[in-house]
Length: 131
Image (tube, rainbow, N blue to C red; front, side, top):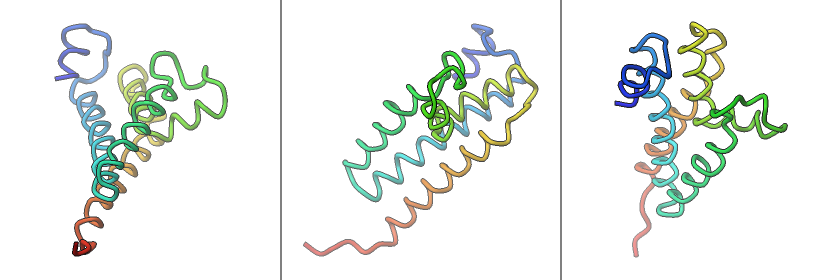
């Protein structure tokens, strides 16, 4: 839906529609699995930690509204290690630069996705204490 609005209706991204949809899906997967993994490991505190990490730090350090290079260091670099920044850089890369320099953001998003899903699986295997 986000790709349909941003690409087809508003015309603010101009790359291949399916590639942009894949980028947004991978970004959502990375953020969702990371927050789910934290929630599985730490309960409600994990959800709060995930929200703090993704929304407060991730969005503000991402550089999506301008460019990560325009943020003071190390804020711009930290933002690119988090899914919102990596997703924004990857979308910018595929929408405007034909996928140039997409490897780093893809790797970052894949790593967050795998680690988040692994945390969910780890929490399911850990025996619950008897109360």
